[in-house]
Length: 167
Image (tube, rainbow, N blue to C red; front, side, top):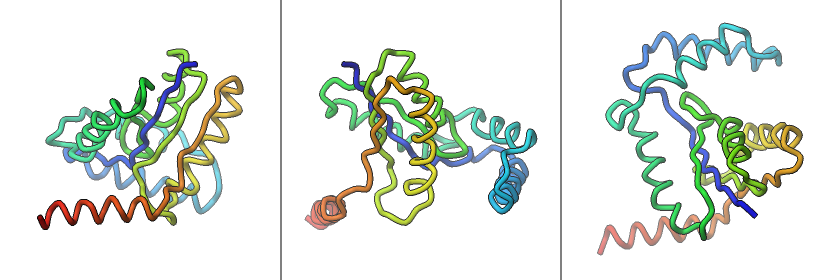
């Protein structure tokens, strides 16, 4: 059984991506969220431009940081392949990462967000909604969501970091 883990990060616009593109995209997303409609052609075009903007560690330190986290996590996964995806501003999307996993023969895909606490729209709403759509698109693939996190374990991680920094 081929197992793939997808680490999902928030995503950030590249520092050199024109602010007017991001501002217009967020305005269109807000309008759509208020009306409950589908993305307009303009919104889809802007989202594609922002997500495809060329990335470097200098213009997108968030992406570089998530990729470093992925590099640390990968050897701990018992041979599972690790892919990275982003909720917004960056490529690939969760749907694109799942499509890549399926293309590579995955039958089991586990999705883990980098968001640690409950209450955020990405982890609590958007990712579960996307996974529901993706389960319908890929019925022969088991898609699991490794969330919410055990907050005691998260607190221990923070305490260990604090103890390391103090010592």
